[in-house]
Length: 356
Image 1: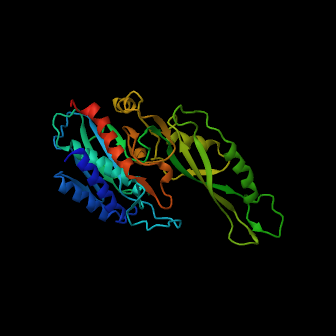
Image 2: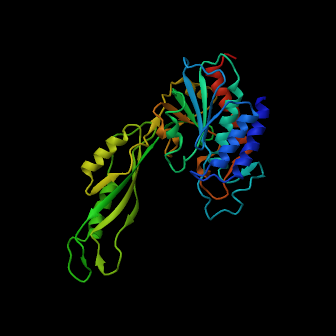
Image 3: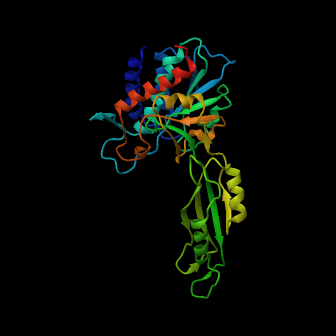
């Protein structure tokens, strides 16, 4: 099929995806749609749980490999929707529907791009496509589960809405559970060790704490208290106050380094839930990035998390759509953004993998 034909087929596929609920860990039916695309386009594919993946027809294990990845799960629609989130409608050039922007537009654009190159011979890089599950929930059966199954990856394009600009770095994430202790008592009696009052000083510490290393691309590490919970009845002082701390990690620290710092310095007990969602980046001089820059694409650092966090290779986040529309009511993507996305993906890759 031509690029134009693939583009219109991709838009039709996105409409089908929108109208097929695919909450994290419940992506079986959208997985079927991805399988059907592969069958129609004579692509030999594989399926592992709800992850659908394929390699280019003339895969050569002696060549380096580029991963093209995006996800087909969605969050739940919020209460602000005025349109049916599971009905794909086009109005004024906007394609509305849950998952249209995050990240259906990226998914179908990368799948169309993969299909464009699938049959081509003598490519300088192999291509691997993975339509992955459980990205929104950081679940155990998403892209992370595929890395021991698919061929070794040298560099990756992760499809998330970036307005087709090049996110050459992405902050990692650590969620901590913190506990402020004190002395439980009856509310009627004196207590100079009330953990709720003790928490005031702890909150001030978290609010004012500064990590030393600043990233040129990602800026400072950002630490935020997002939850607080204590007490069960009005007349009893609790023994503890529980806090949840959200830390967005720049590329100057590993998650372990951040955890070690806070465990040592925080004025309360603090335990990380997981250290696996690390920051990620790619050298700005990598030929993939230079190819994008030559097409007028700009580089930046992304504060939001994606499947890049589970990759150990260099990776760039790049896709049609706008991140500010993600998880919003009446989510949409412009149809022209999908057309542009496919065109730019193909042009970037053509520069570095094809002699044509």
